[in-house]
Length: 90
Image (cartoon, rainbow, N blue to C red; front, side, top):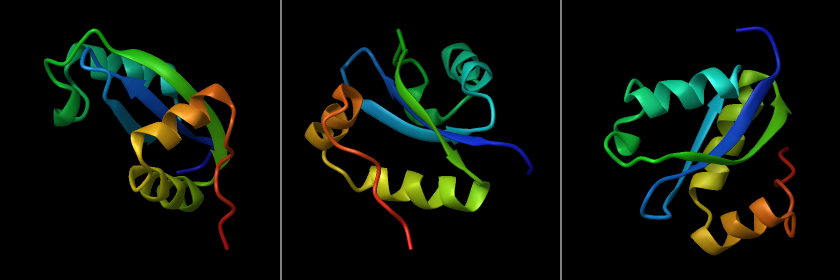
């Protein structure tokens, strides 16, 4: 899986934030909107892409996705606003 991986946050109609990774964020968002993506987002539209960032290779993307899924919603909101940065990984 070569190429630049992206970490992204999608907001659903109930203001929940979904964290995911993809090589192509626009394509992945369209999959989520069509209901072809994660079950957690099916029937939860409208969906909006709130934030995304290139994060490097697949391994790093997976590790950052896991880290962000542990964050509180308020910390994710701060990331969207640019008030906090992604964690450094060892």
